Every structure is written in structure tokens, then in C-alpha cells.
Image (cartoon, rainbow over all chains, first blue to last red; front, side):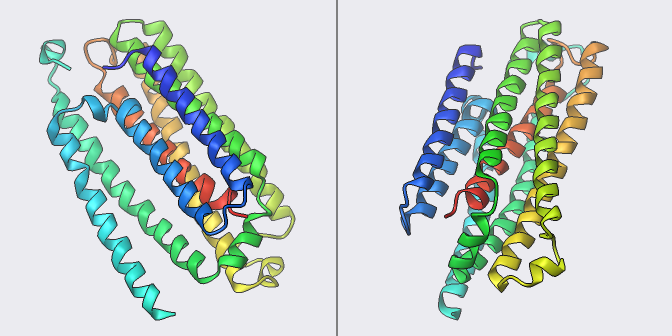
Length: 88
Length: 204
């Protein structure tokens, strides 16, 4: 299990990524703006999941279970966008 | 985590954590559905979403993000403290975590109040003068930040219960899965905000 030092580092990383996403939003990236902010949000989630939520240190079962909602959600999002992409 | 630490207690350490994760999966699906609704409408009304979002307080949103991320740090540290037998430190860190949760909710209250006093709330006469995309944006804003706020409130209550249990030594260095699961919930609520923040405050 990680110690306080690693937790502080992860927290620093999260704050840095927050600053980055605010700066990127002000930079006017246009169509890439949404992609950038979602990518940064995903990176922050991975940091929280792996270190604060200890997923990096968990047994294989819990880590493998995470694929269940992720795949389900990916399929739902994919099919919905397939639909609205051809609807309008 | 080895099993030596939990001998003598009728608890199933791994089972308790797996149960919590499965509950969090259902929460993920709940919020994903709402995010999907958001992205479907944003792709339909991109300009109106942008103009509506520019009226949100970006400073307040950033401040709240830092508050929640820091509360996640103190939550993780409180579990580390109880593992290593520092009860007082863990109690202090748990109190700090719930206090930051309260600050988050107070900020949310100030933000909502400002919007409501400007006549922007679901179905308000003021909001109905806006375009359809803006009406939908604010509908989603109140729905998503509202449901997220309820989760923060639930987290604060859970941590308050943990403070009582830790004080009574029912959460201790030998048995802390309840506090760990509370932490999982709190970090999950933090992750939801990590997505809410750029999607509502940072589009312009």
C-alpha cells in the first residue's frame, strides 16, 4: 500500500492536471478543446483509481471486475453516437 | 492486505470491498447515462452550450475542484493513519475531509443561489426566453450538479459515521474496511466531479 509521500505526489499531479485543463480551456483549441478536457479528466481518474482507490495494489479479481462497467458503458456510448451520428 | 490483521473479527475483508466496488459500478452507469445525455445534446446544440457555459463561474468551479481533490488526499491519508495505528491523526484527517465536503456544498449553494436570483432555474420564466440548447444545458447543469451534490452530502454523512466508529474503536488498525469503503465512495464522488468540472465550466 502506498505511503503518505506517494499520496502527496499523486495530489500534486492532480492539481497540476487541473491547472493544465483550465489553461487549455482558455487557449481556444476549438474542436480539440473537448477532446483535450476529457483526456485530462480521464488521466485524473486513472490517478485517483490507481493510487487513492488502491486499484494498483488490489487483487486481480477487483481489477478485472472494472472492465465490466467500462465495457458496458463503452458499448452504450458507442451505439448511442452511432445512432445520433446518422439521425441529424 | 494480509488476513492476519483481521483474525478475530467476523468480517470478510475482500468480500466487503468487492461489494463496495460493485455498488460503485452501478453508480458509474448512473452517471454515464447522464453524461451521455449531455454529450448527445452538446453535439446537437454546440453554440448554445458554449454561450450558456460561459455564464458559469469558472473560478468557483476551479476552487471546488481543488477542494475535492484535497479532500481525497486527506481521506486517503486518514486510512493510512488508521492502518498504522494513529487514531488521533486519522480522526483529524477524517474531520478535515468532511469539512472540505461541507465547504464544497456551501460553494455550490452560493453558485445555485446566484443563478436562481438571476432567474435561471428549471422551467423559470427567465430561462424559457433562452434558446432550446441553453434551456437543456441549464437543465443538465442542475440535474448533474444536484445529483453529485447529494452524493457529496451522503459522503459527508458516511464520514461522520466513521468518525463516531473510529472514536469508539470499532474502526481500528485491525478492522478498517468500513473506513476504506467510505474512502472508495468519496474518491468516486471526486472522479465524477473531475468530469463535471470541464464539461460545465470549461467550454467556451
